[in-house]
Length: 118
Image (cartoon, rainbow, N blue to C red; front, side, top):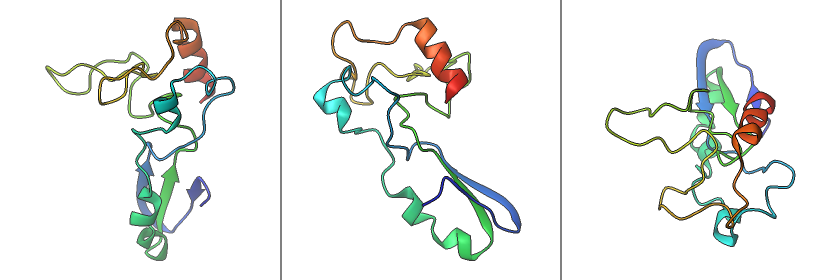
């Protein structure tokens, strides 16, 4: 499926967590479990496939939320009051397990560069 498909209806379905690509050099730095991308929203493009026949646009992420989570603001504020942020460039999966091998986590400069690039 192409990342963006246009339709004549003024509705846009976004699928920000379906991406499965990693930034260059990331695969070697993340844990074996992290490489399986367990927090990916798999097959969402199939769930919304009907939209194209209705003329609705679909915008699907190519890169994993582990690169940059497209549902987060640049300031990485928590989305829900009283709940912690999962991170603009998450270090932990939703299960609380580390995504990166010890000492391989991205620093603030890398996260800023990813935010600009992706």
